Image (tube, rainbow, N blue to C red; front, top):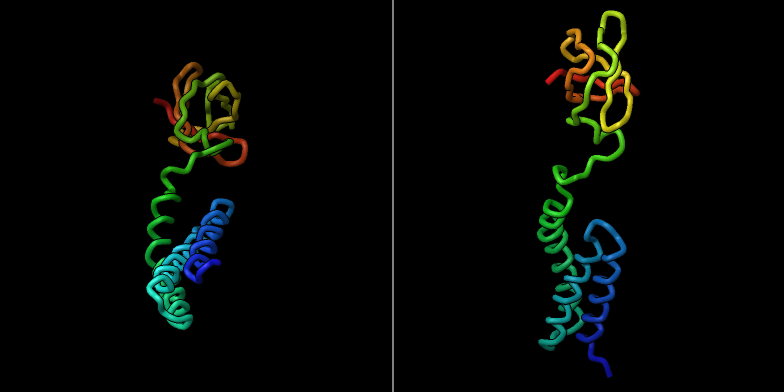
Length: 145
């Protein structure tokens, strides 16, 4: 026969397993609270004390543990840039001279041909090495390096 503290532990484990499939560490906070309630039940306290431990454990985990995990697991700097956002900072070369006055200029970056504009407003000759500074629409803003 299962004791009450066994049930708390099983529910906690189920919540930890559920956390694997959901983002945000919400179910993990509830799982930690279940473990706190299991400890209180194991010590022989009644249901009211167990529920109080569950509520206190949930609040402590939600406001104490969750921010720590979110801060260390979802850092902005570790985000991988994809698609065209990955072009910023890449280097390439000019394949058609860049002249902002007439709106001409093309560059080759990562094997792809792009329409380009000089961020400095200066003429950049064909064959010059460039770095992508920003992207607007289908136009790369570049500077010579």
